[in-house]
Amino acid sequence: MNIFINEVPLWVSILFLMVIPIPVFLIASLGRKGATDDRRPVVFYGILAFYLLYLSYVTIACLNGAFEKVSLPPRIMVLTAVPLLAFLVVIVFNWPFYRKVLSRIALADLVRIHIFRLIGSFFLILAFYETLPPAFAVIAGFGDVLTALTSLFVAAAIHQKKSYAVPLTFAWNTFGLLDILATATMAFFLTKISIETGARGVDTLAAFPFCYIPAFAPATIIFLHLSVYRKLIQAKK
Image (cartoon, rainbow, N blue to C red):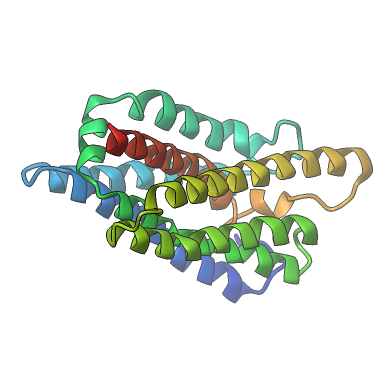
């Protein structure tokens, strides 16, 4: 039985599965940098274990058709992204241990990690194969790619202690956050239009393996952007 979506070539799905672990390893490595020497293995493997369990749940749910029905709100958001966001923002963000780890992470490293948003180029690939609305793919894809590439320049400005580093970081962080919020909002309204008119929506993002995008990316990216804001506040103090 073919578990992959049929509308795109097999190599696209395989390539996506090869790159999707990258952000998890980057996040785990970032957490390790902020931990004390005796806690580094615990933090690194703890983050890896958490996302492994979470993505295993996403995989099982997707392959069993949990996200297939087109509905509002989208089932994949209700069953994955929203609970993950609530866990990260309500529990982890207010966890004293997380605040200690964050205080030890360099702001430049926290910004540079967003290079993994180059994975957003898959929006453009999926649009090329006519499985996503072009306007959605262009806005979401180029927004992610632009955020990823500019993160390197912002991180360099922070590392070099440029006079404009802090306002530049704030502007970049705000753009990146608004981009991911705009992508989620567009996906919601395209789903609504798809239900009402039968027009192409974002159903591809609820199919394997691309279900990992809405299940993992919005909540994790929002959490990382909020962490940058907190880091900027810490630096100001």
